[in-house]
View 1 (cartoon, rainbow, N blue to C red):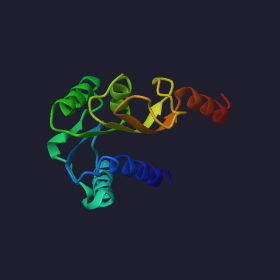
View 2: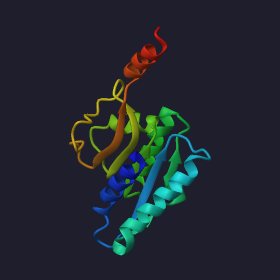
View 3: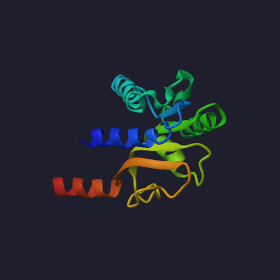
Length: 158
């Protein structure tokens, strides 16, 4: 259910950019690529293209799919690379990318942040429908280490 909602929200967000029949270069930031992630990435690309249809030409250049390997410095470098190249829209996934992008006070290009964020570490106001920051939106699930530890303690009776 969450995955379907995730895709619907993504597709609606991207569809707003696709009303002009232009070509859009999509950049993707990922923490780590693994065998499980690869088919999900391909599915994401296919669904975006299918929903946008003929309204716009959506492209996902391989050179704009960047992996940081859980390295904060590399994540910042990757984000800056997409800001400074021909990327039109940035999609970001993963906790390290979330750390870099959610800390930005302004965004030069439309950026959509996906995944889970730990509210103990980030200051995103997830109660609002929008970020309140120009060119930035997020589709995230809020998690908390503190709540996880409390649940663990309750389950183990420690």
